Image (cartoon, rainbow, N blue to C red; front, side, top):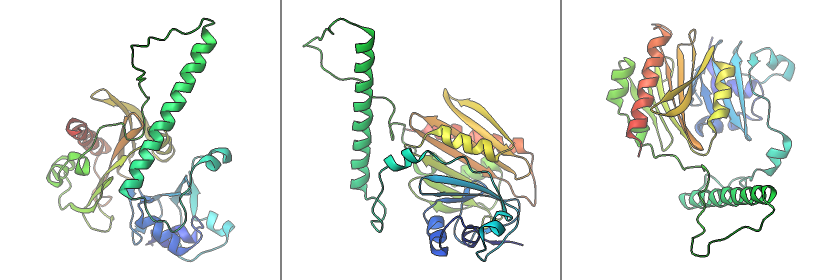
Length: 295
């Protein structure tokens, strides 16, 4: 028996209200079996549901579907919690928060945030270098007045390459590489593209996700918790990971670029299972194309 994902995450008390659950789905913060989920996406026992709220990602495996909110002890019987431990309270307290009701940042505000991150990283790097030099040398530093002071900043959010629409890959190429006939585009925005054979995510699904300013190590740790096998890989000199689950017909390939990374996720149709090697080969090939076409 299946139930809507927004009703499910509310019923098992991952969100405080049903409307908050729907808003999380519409905002792209809920994923079912590695694919971004709409509020009406059905879930069944065995599905993996990821919910990112308040700076923390919850990962649960569905063991029983419910659509009515129940007590915490009863809710705990409806899922297996595979969530990583929450970050320390000190880190959460230091993170800036946007005022409630302010909506999504505008393009101007995002540019201002990028400049703020850049300046913060630069100041931190210069401070660390100065302390290191001072600790290692008792002599007065020699400064060349003719040499401009242009230190090189470390990798920063948004410092990676630009990936075109849908990772630079067309619908026809996704169909050819995955072998999934009947794929149609269901999501297309600046950071996510998704193709589905049924329109309701009950069949084969392929998705591209671009994460700017998000460390790939955190996503890799989440994949290790939720996939049967996770290995490191390298594509055209760029390091990343590959994780897959044979029973769920799911394979994910993530590739890092400084403080950014992207991820291709492929899920086969459970009604017509295929070898997981074929699904992972498709994910690797799509990731290679995205790297080749990045600017």
